[in-house]
Image 1 (cartoon, one colour):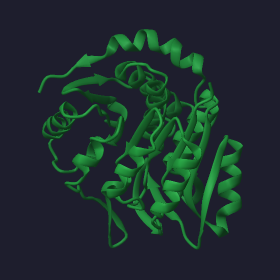
Image 2 (cartoon, one colour; image 1 turned 90 degrees about the vertical axis):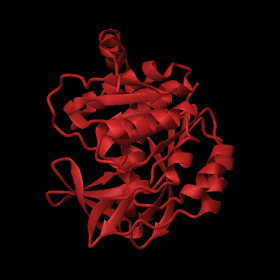
Image 3 (cartoon, one colour; image 1 turned 45 degrees about the vertical axis):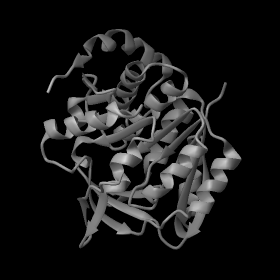
Image 4 (cartoon, rainbow, N blue to C red; image 1 turned 135 degrees about the vertical axis):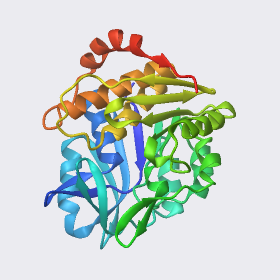
Length: 296
């Protein structure tokens, strides 16, 4: 059965050394699922009419169908050394009634809420939950980003604890759980949320690997030993692939390991085909043995 996936969140134009390219979770995660697994992927996003041909054309080439809301602006991120350092343009709100209409119409197997800069209100997550298919996932990045004089800061909203507990899978880089600067305190807090919900948390550590937090337990999965070419979008691919395998009925750890493998392969194969399904399964047998349980 072909999985139907709906991404909700603005796509971006990423400025890398003066070159513009399409970005955002709906692009990286959507491309991974469409190319790698043949999923039927939709992305609900604002699209600047000046760049519509570029956005829709590139997305279509990789199997992503754009549900575009016409706009005069869209988010533009300046990226250096794999990190977003500056924001330009605008990330307009995606109206709740439009989100609800597509949730009803598409009845997706996997729904991924992935804002880039606060274009989705946290209070709306409960409505998304009502229409969710098999899996409902959240990327926290756009819920914690805040602008200060053109620079991006991380600001945690206490409402997020309750919001994230409604999802099946949540992804965020460790630094995005910015209610503390302590890795141990962050993990303790995430673990606490996971004890009262069914949420599986994927906490990216960049090249170090990923923490998986579920049912109060914490596991560590190392990244594959690959040559780093370009790691932009790796977290989006981790979330996408893990969500895909959860929707297929695999366990949290089985799904997370496959997500880590796919993300690692993209980092090395950034300018060619990112990965093939059989590559993931080839790596899986040895990599599942590298999981470590973490005690705080």
